[in-house]
Length: 198
Image (tube, rainbow, N blue to C red):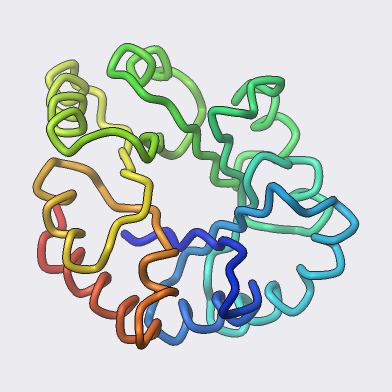
């Protein structure tokens, strides 16, 4: 599973990066737009929503459940910086069909979410592969099956190593967008993931 994370950059607009991700075969987009106001996102979103709808691509927003609901998105990703909202309150607001992900950085924190009504946990970008492998092993030994996603600047050729560490997928975007051919880089990342899927 590849969750493509949008990030502002000097080469392409957010809409252009989403289009390239879709052309590369990605079917899950996370809008990471911390520097934009709600009004800016409302202006940006319609074209992206249309692109994703036309290609049956799942679209979620980071940290703004109220806005995600307003825009009719598929879900929300709660980063480590979004601690004013509990997963339970977000689930109540967005309803049973929404996909909710939560960033957390330790096996204990993942296990504390055992009974939370969430769909995946995301690990912080600064975790090493060894730390990720140990965390996944500890969580699985505790018989917790929640999907675990590794996030960060993960290049296409590194995707297989993360899958070998036991994660269910990766969340990345910038290395692919800054590649010579972003569409090819996204397709290659997906190929790596699919070849090593759990």
